[in-house]
Image 1 (cartoon, rainbow, N blue to C red):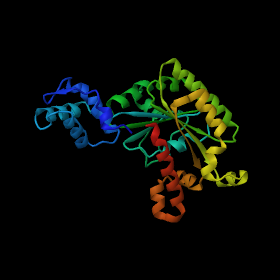
Image 2 (image 1 turned 120 degrees about the vertical axis):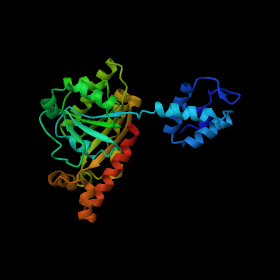
Image 3 (image 1 turned 45 degrees about the vertical axis):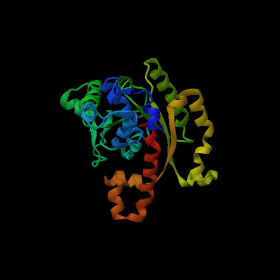
Image 4 (image 1 turned 90 degrees about the vertical axis):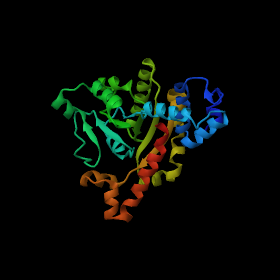
Length: 298
């Protein structure tokens, strides 16, 4: 975490006024806010540097800050080359504030599975309004109130996927360890990274090893918290040879009948928790842990 002194070290203030323009100061203020500093702390730092925040400077800065304070849009892609690895499940478990899920798999409708989520099945929308996919994603980024746009995909590096990769800020890849699809998942990651490099796009990556069952871990004699050590070679390969510093987190999701129940009865975990607290508390904690792990990609 940067200190306020580090953030504002280049700011020049003379006679209580900002030597450079107010707009040049705004990115510094935004950076400080993103680091977790309150606006009062920021202005105290500026006062130390000689800024008179008791007169017009204070009002001008806040006015400009408010005018330009458009919230950052996160476009999170959940993708893999193979079907059945848990893309839609992981998508539906992402508890991001002010979010919308856009399903671009034309073969299935998911809003009926998760009626408590804000979901757009794009190809249903396209039938009704004949809207272009890229135009729709751009309109969500530029005009919608949604801060987090989560895109659920069909398997493979499709033309639809290529269309929207230039807008993506983070990619989550669910992988089934020990499954025949595991190697194909790594090949898919390599293909996507190569494509992103060709279009000059840098994004944050997360790998989620999905459906790690207690039975599986017991069979191989590994405690759940030591699981990531088990796949260390795979992680090292991804980090050193393919994704490098773009790989922000590797995590996992344990298999649970509760997740299947949630999809069958079409109820959120919080609603199920009210019905049977003891039964559903473990999966509630597991999902919270997963979301905490994935925060680093935002």
